[in-house]
Structures are given as C-alpha cells and as structure tokens.
Length: 428
Image (cartoon, rainbow, N blue to C red; front, side):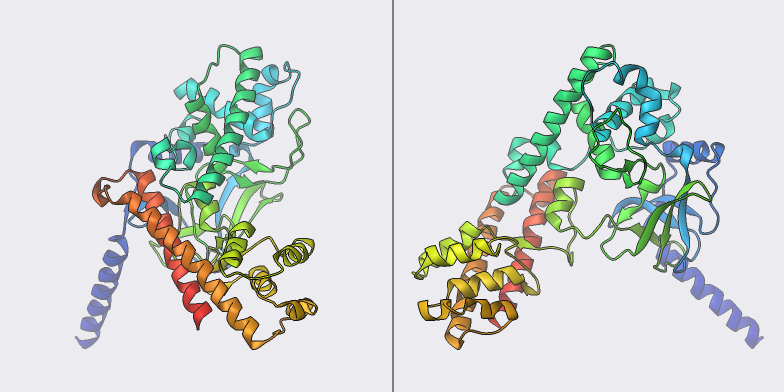
C-alpha cells in the first residue's frame, strides 16, 4: 500500500510540474501551422526525437516547443535541401526574367522578388504553406511612422534611417528590374519591405557557390521553413551547418531542455541597437548590450571641464584609433574609452608618457580621479538624455501604446538601466 501511495504521489507531482510547464505556452493549432506541418511531411521532412512543434509563449510570442527532453549534442532541426529557399532556388524560378536585365541584383533583392511573386500565386505556389505563416508585417524601424521614429534615441534613429535608406535604394533597383523585364508582377514599396524583412529577419547562413547572375556580395543566405520559427536567445549555444551526408541543413544544440520548454537559437552576439534595427526586438539583460559615445560627445565634456592641450591629445588618439569604439556596458567602460579619458585628462608632463596607459598602467592618482570624474559626467549626460527621451512618452498610456512605441520605450528603459549600472561601476 505504501509503495502504491508513493507511486501515486510521484505521478501527481509529475502532473503538476507538467501543468505548470504547459501554463506558459499554448500549442499553435491554427490552420496555417497545421498546413505547414502537413506540407513539410509530404515533402520528406521527418522529425526524429526531439519532436518540436509551434507554440505561443508568454514572454517571446510564437516559437518552437520540444515534446521531449533535449541533451547537449542533439540535432534539434534538420531541413532537407529541397525545402530551402536559396539564391539558386530563386534563379531556377526567375531565370527567364532576371537574365534579361542588363544589371545585377543582390541575392537578397532577388529573394525578395521571389517571395513577392510566390505570395501573389497564393495556393498555386509550391511555397504557399510556408509563405502563409510568415508575419504580415515586422517591427523593424522601416515599418515605423515618422512619429514613432522620433521616439527613438538620436543615435538609434540615425542608424535606423541609414538602414531604411539602404532598403529603399534596394527597392528602387528591384522595381526598375521588374518594370523592365516582368511588368506584370507589379509590386509596391510595402510589398518589398515585407519581402526584404522576411529574408532579413529569418534567413540562415548557408555557404554555397555564389550565382554569377547576382552581385557577388558574399551574402550567404537561405530561408529554412519551420527552422525559422526558432526564437533568439543570447545564451543559446548552437552549431548550424549543411550536412552533406544527410543533404539537410541542421542545427545542433549544446544546451539542455526539459519537455515542453521553448527551444532557442542564437542570431549572434548583437547589442540591442542591432537587434532593434535589423530584427525588430530588444532584450533586457542582454550581455552584449553597449552604449556608444561619439568622440565629439567625449570632447564636449573635456571642454566643459576646461582641460588643456586638446588639439595634441585629439591627434594622438585619432592616430592610434582610440577615438573609436567608445562605449560602456553594465560592467564599466570599454578599453578604448578608458584610454581616451586618461589621455584627455593628462597634464602636459604626463602626456609625454601617454603610452603607459596602453599597458594598463596608471599615470598618477590625480589622472585616475579626473578620468573617473570625466566618465561620470559623460554617463550622467547620457542619463539626462534618457530621461528627456522618456518624457516623450508621458502622453502615451502603457495599455494603448503601439508595438513600435512600446519597443522604443523598452529600448530607452534598458539603456537607462545599463547607464545606471555603468555609473555605479565607475564611481566604485
């Protein structure tokens, strides 16, 4: 009897754990996700253990959930080559049009045109089950209104505008190509933005021979249906490559997961500015996150502090390229910023031995103290700018913010937290 009671107790505890685990995610039973699975199965996609399926998670939204425990070294996804959309796939489909043009498109432009053409075919397209589950829009700044763009910090907005300009240039060239050789396709800027960011946010690195018909920009990309449902985590440890033996694109994880956990991949060691501009999301507690300072903003602080011999100091730093990569993170200052501040705070006698700081040495106690003061002033100035940026949201209610407004707000809050941590480090 005692043995049976113990067994029943263990079963009850296990069920409670499973219910607790399942509470944070809901399986995606939408028709389009079921259709995607059926389509892939018809086309020789086979899942061995672990079995993954689409689910909606409380913190990350749509992702992939495992139905089995995963151990380090397991292959979590294996996509057959014929289900990858590569530049060669595109060329096979569009060659009759593209080769008529007297200029070259990039692989990403060609893949974007391909997606637009296949989406217009609707259910008659072989790729329809995949295209049908792609987001209808994205949260990258290219989709922001002018008002929403103005909510971003100046440096992020500047970088976003550069990216937007690049995409608009790509659109104009692509539209010219289609107008000349395939006028019946006829697509808008919004169509192109959707296709471009479908490729930009979801493609994987896939080494292949570059197509001679496209610009040789070394942009080795492919779209991998189902695999691209995996979300990013900065701590995910994976290996992704094409397996010639299985003729599949595979992802192997070095992490462990419990049954019903969300499974992650890593897009790379990116800070939140990159994640926002390129992918349309930000991550709190991102260990790769940094706050950049322009050399001009650093020099502005030296002027306020009335430091001398700035012309000579500026020349020294620029010659050694210590005027770049000036940033801080929650753990303190970058090496280049430490060097720059120490050099800028030297008196004329100390400046003769400025290279001492390159070996991590200290010039003098007074120089160290002045450098700390300058660093604190620089960070406090950025914190004031953060507070000023947050005032733009005073008239916006949390519950009624658009996704883009919320994204800009979250970015600034994360930036403020990083600066506050860096300030504590500097002053300690």
